[in-house]
Amino acid sequence: MKFNRSIYLLFSLFFIGTLWSCLEPAEFPPEPVIAFESLTPKAEDAADLIIAFTDGDGDVGLDQEDTLDVFCPVGCEFYYNLFLEYYELQNGEWVYIPLDPEQGQIPFYYRVPRVTPSGQNKALNGEIKVDMPVYSLISEFDTARFEVKLVDRALNISNTITTPAFLKP
Image 1 (cartoon, helix red, strand yellow):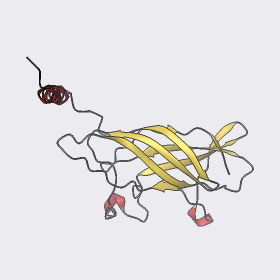
Image 2: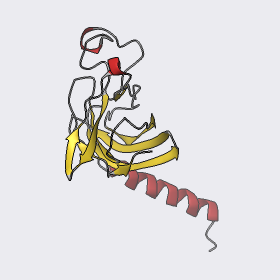
Image 3: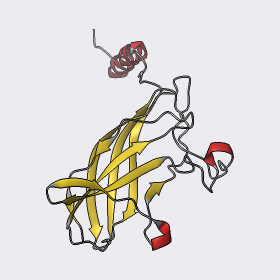
């Protein structure tokens, strides 16, 4: 008796689908968890930062309209949801350098857009790519790094990660 290929293929797909449906859905904690992926210079004055993230309840990101209460644009701590704090290596010690917009320094704070998972499982995992300007602050020190954290809409704050050191342009 000759076995029909299409029946074999159909049976194989059914078997794989059955196994796939038995897999447990991804489960992550409700607060975001981030991990460093890369910091890649693109030009003399720009770089791409990529971080991996997970979030168990799927509430990462903000809509453009999210500008009320704690997300207000003036004086609210959580108008931004991705924070990169700038450090310089000064005489063998990492020193936090607060950036002051009134002095023409732009803090590395960003609004990650809302990510809406589909289906019943709201857990998210993915990557965030930040196209960031890199500029040289007036300083005698040439080595810098960032500490990064992500905040979700429930104001859960992620772990803090540190990028590798890099030479300033």
